[in-house]
Amino acid sequence: MRFPLALPLGAALAVHLMAQTPATPAPPPPAPPTLLGFALTGSTTFGSQYVFRGLTQTDGKPTVQAELDLVHPSGFYFSTSLSTISWFTDQNAGVASAPTGLGSPAAVGAPLYRPGKANSAGVELDLFGGYKWGFAKDCTLDVGLYRYLYPGTYDNLGAYRNPATTEAYLGLSYAWASLKYSRVISANTFGVNNSGGTSYVDLNLAIPLGGSGWTVLAHGGRTNFSAKANPGYFFNGSYLTGDNALFSYSDYKLGIANEIKGYVLTLAATKTDAKSRAADNDVTVYENVMGRNLGKSTVTFTIAKAF
Image (cartoon, rainbow, N blue to C red; front, side, top):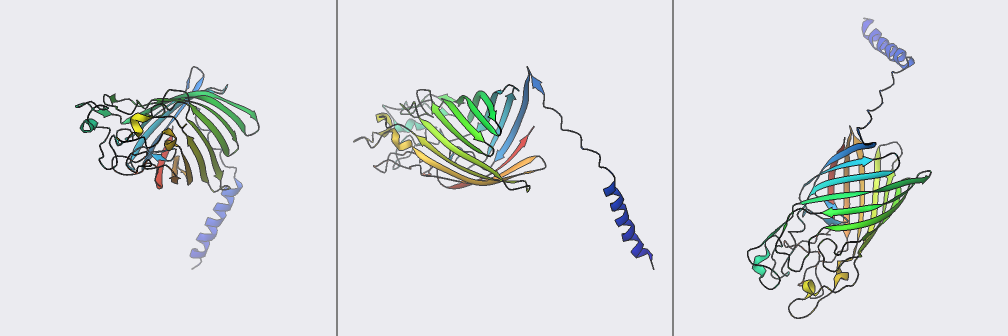
């Protein structure tokens, strides 16, 4: 009759003895492979959609992404990333009252578009690199170049341009806060004609919640296009209904993230004030051929794994 009591007492003693025994330290994680002195790392991401600066790049559909990074102890780094997209060919090559997808705009007709020709762009390929300088405790200065490429077919662009874009950027971070300024140095910005010099400034916060493993994410950004003329795009058949300043907008994000068994799970809500249409309510700005604003409020869930 005494055995049932002796068992839990024995278990408690075993736990006590184990607590008194020094634990074997966990082996350190293996160092990443190197290439010419650069540490090679990478990641893969699966998301419910791809949102860039508040604008959906996949019309709310799932995305797959991958990234490779080369980082040198001196501070130099080079990276490349790949993502599925649909935003370019989802654009409305017509007007809101007569939508025609840029992926097959032949029906719009002359003089801007060429009958029987089409466009296709389903992938974004990014190349970027720069230098990070840790000049004080928790303070880092980051300067570099970013090249956005969209491999595809561009046989029927009409009022649009190839979306390939080059930006120069300068960033400053302190602990969990970072501020970054980017400026387009190519002739056009993501397919918008006569839009060189477009700028983007954004503030990002990644606030750790103590030792819980959770991180609160907050972001605010502003895209600024100069008020340059773009008559091929904004002429509605009767008069000019705007200029490139209509593409300017602000975007905001609030989210939360946690790492679970090596996977980073992120849930974030985004919102913008991006305009759907120009003043005539027919020429579209950020409204795609399906009649949806790319910058509408939305929630995105992603799972990322580093390797």
